[in-house]
Image 1: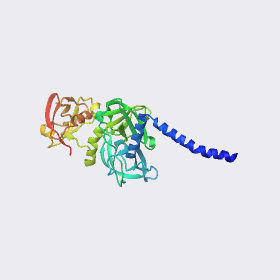
Image 2: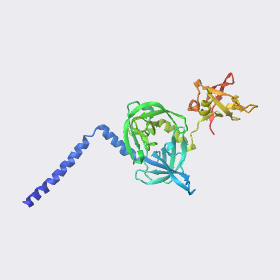
Image 3: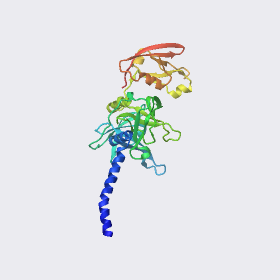
Length: 352
């Protein structure tokens, strides 16, 4: 009897396994198109996503020994196969040492080659990059519309390569950069973005890079369904400059401006010129900076109130007005000096 039972089981087991296998195939075949799309994008894009950690030097209060202290962590992605990595500026700000961890968990030292705090972007280079690095296809953020599907890949709270999905909630948002400037044209998404996601890619349903995740809005510090990403079209303009020059090259006119805090403290309407550099366009046009009077008091020179008709109330307003101009372009500065209104036509030059 037992022998007969074993024979029956031997015959039935392969059929049962085949049925289970077919059931699994059937189950997978019933996955929605959206699930299949998300799975495919994550599979292709995740090898391009890296974990970025940095350490800073600190002196021990008691022993006075200098030690390396973990300072921050975030996400980045491979820019090209030579080992360039793009991340957020705030992820590696003040770093003494930066480590890039790939999907295979291999760790690689990296050096900082370019910083743009005004756009919260940074470029790293792995010192000894491995072969076979995978890059992300570039998208066009100008083609995004509210409601389009987006996917965020990152390392939230230090967890390995995590995927979240959502939609574009809004376009053209503004957020504050680490240097207190405004970053305009930012993408808002409800894809969950948590600490550690910063610097990671935001992808569209084609698997193309459309943004760099940079911030969340949340009273608790965790995702509340409001995340922000820097548009890829901005990234494509900034990163080549960081690679070539280590910073963003912007047109200048040759002036030093008062800080926003000083302007707010003294309730000045406009942006005072503190110093005019000799030999540069502003000086040649006749602009004047602040100076001290006979009693040591500060006497203001020109106060910029508008550039090409665009009101100027802060440093962000000033830089936004010049952004996008090329050396050789001419702007009209409306200024106030004392009780007189002045206007200057000035040719911008490339920053040195």
